[in-house]
Image (cartoon, rainbow, N blue to C red):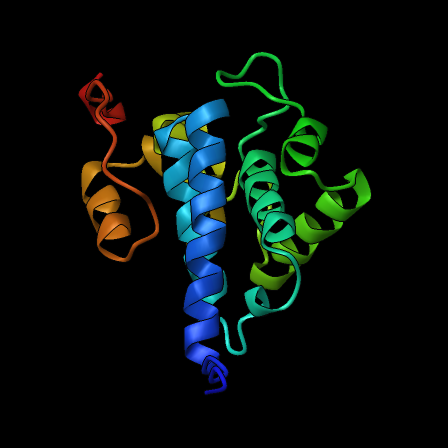
Length: 177
């Protein structure tokens, strides 16, 4: 009896699971759980894209592109970061050529308009130091929400503009002097 061809959804789900498995194993060996979580989220987002690009191409190439993208956003190749790893070392670990890994990462970044320090793809442990997570427009001016009054921060959080209300010492109001 001939084997039936998997449906598009089955093929996509299989690709997502295979790529996520490669990414998880890589992050467990070389990075940390925080990287693994972001890489899995990005893999799943690629799987939800219609049509999913994950069904074409090699799983190790997609896995490399995903890890490279999250590493790029979080400056993984900066020696001052922990963990630290050259992006080209990611390519080698996945058995992918440097230009292929770089190209796949660039494709993913363009697909989702991912920028350096993108708050959506930043490590949660570093979000406090990421100025992009806190910049909002108030009356046409770009401001750092960490320095706004609490009620403005609460409104920004309610609207999903900032990740949380930062703990900080109370600022002295100008009229209290």
